[in-house]
Image (cartoon, rainbow, N blue to C red; front, side, top):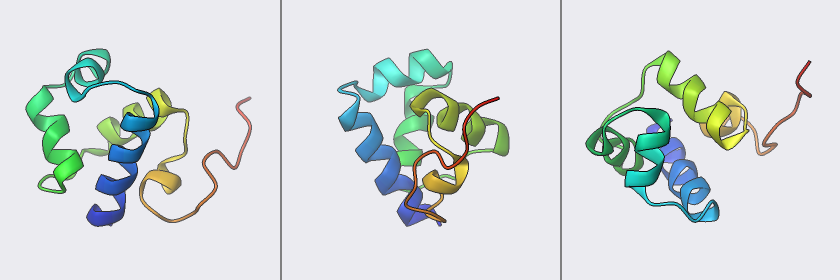
Length: 76
């Protein structure tokens, strides 16, 4: 899970053209923690995983590599 998560996280950040510092500030987490997530050193908590998914507008399943579909369900 970690390898897919870290690769997708890096991809989404680069796609958004933001730095790790900019994203960590928007998510209100430390840059070091975000760096560890991208490097696959640490796993985020469930709450942080949901926060990241909401920020990038993708599902947690997409972040975890369980699907290739970014957002399978519409928001209600």
